[in-house]
Image (cartoon, rainbow, N blue to C red; front, side, top):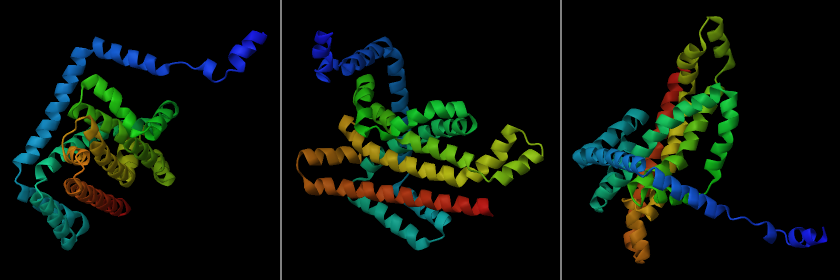
Length: 294
């Protein structure tokens, strides 16, 4: 007994250590080897999606994209001067020689946000409709939200090799949580009187969800879309460390070569794109609130 106390109790925590990292590494490596063909299919599919989005953006003349942003700004805010400012800012990116890099970054953001919407919206509905699913998924969402973003890069690279594929997957994991949470929150906090009126008229659970809860929750859901876009934008820049091309890679290369001016311009371009996306989605939230209140 005394030997046990001396070896294990008094030597805490050194005598109690276990190598979880080695176990996880072995498991990931085994999974990558056993499912190599399937992972290759996923990798090619993701590259095709990103390349397709980028191809469409590059096919559209830059003037048309700028005018589209100006028109969308006016439609959402009814402010021509704000649209003109956004147009000038985008023109500045083009004059800086960063238009192509911006489109590469924007392609990954668009692809990741689309996947987040396709996954996050039904998951949010599931959390709102099922208390059991809420109990199971909420700790997972908490873990995903508090985990440092760098952690997602390592397994993604290990499974898919450096490039756009692990960048997109890491971005989706990082940016998915707000979409799920805000969808669930919006559905759960619909006005109780409206739900009672729906039940009183004999609406089924599905009819109530589609015709009452989702329309009333649109402003909250749009807020989730806004947060998802912002988190995706931030993560795509971080993913330059694992080979994601675009503005983030330009900053990384300039930083490694200690070229302040070269790093400053893509940094400004990222801020411009992020601000425009943020302001437009916020305007969409306000517009949806007006429609719901109306």
